Image (cartoon, rainbow over all chains, first blue to last red; front, top):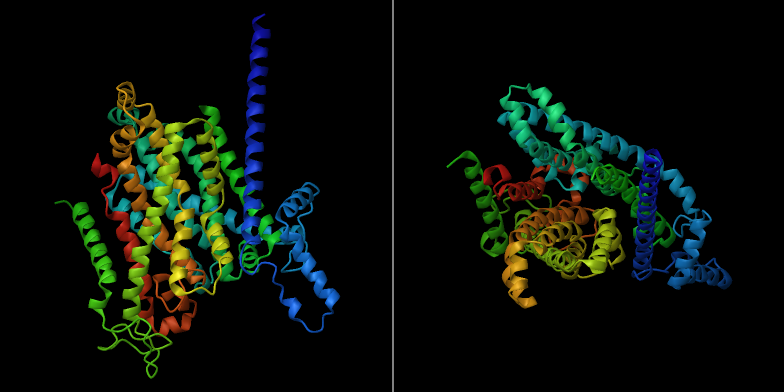
Length: 299
Length: 271
């Protein structure tokens, strides 16, 4: 009887959690689609939309010019564009780039690995450096180390993203190092604050009073407490890294998604910009969701 | 007076001086930021031109001083706009709750899920580029203000939600305070430090974002100077190496942002 009740409770909890997960996933997907369609609306009403310089080509016949105009009129009816885009999306068709005259899916497939690699390596480097720096400052509680770390990160945080991109270009450094340099100072500050708050808790003070070694305090008492907020930082840092990748790739001419987004925005390329926005939003909300899930489950 | 307080005072003094130089630019230089000395382009620093001239023969010191005015007066304006939006929406979401709270938070989540710089670049690129310089300044900072609120909204929302359940608000409700009385006597005074903190935090972020946008050619338009568009030529590394004083706008910008980070006491100091 007791076993049956436990099984029933377990099934009920799992069903509840699965339903919550499905609800959350649906909300996140809807948010991403709404974001992409909002972006499409912005492009549609932007000055210069629908102007195609090919229309100025004297070699083209009137029929060709009409065909070009009718291509743009597809995007002119915004709601029909929304419908066509979502229907295409469900069939795996993201449309054709008006600027590059190539299928958007192919372009994304071609460019995404460059950005994904740069963002991943940049994030990994930033996380390693920030974790090492914050752990060292918390472990040693040394004012010289603390001030040096604050000075270095304070200087990095005060540099505009475009200047970091130019520095990377000048030093011939890969894009991921630029992403790491932009993400590192913010990550260090968040991590340091989270660890310092955990270090100031009464049980840590009690452990210190009992003469427990600093390493043991750090790894047994501080990090387990700070673990969940630190994991939640992954989502925030992914968003920061994606944001940094755009100017970095645009200025250093790296063939990634950032450069593509930049070109799409400047050329009013509706299908391309909508799909990039959708992908970036999905990636960001997905990472944020994954990072927040362990925290929600622990509550 | 300990070292931290001294350093904080130094930062405040530096910021005050930079602000004053932008505000009273005419007292620091007698040139116009558009005046071209056509016979001396790219000249080195001299007594007449303290930081030399740019490629078009304009006095660089004058352009930096007037650029300070643009960057340091409009970034706070954008920060104020973002804080007001965050205060209104965050306050409504936190105090009212219900479906309105859900809609506001979902909108903030949607805005935060897109990297700010990505949206800014897309939105600014969609606005006409051949606008007058003054209009480009207004467009840049209004766009910054309109898009920079979601992070502040989360903070205001959390604080006002805590306030909704606080004892003194409950007591005020029980005493029959009107909504306006409650808002102006109980809620706003309690949230004022949070609004101020969000306002001060946003200023350096907007200064840096404007610099990046202007360096990409999407921010403040020439001939109006801003710290960002003064750095536009910095991709020409050989020219920069030959004329290192052209990096002065970057030094001023970095100094300002660093000073903004240290003008308020840290949490350890407050404790």
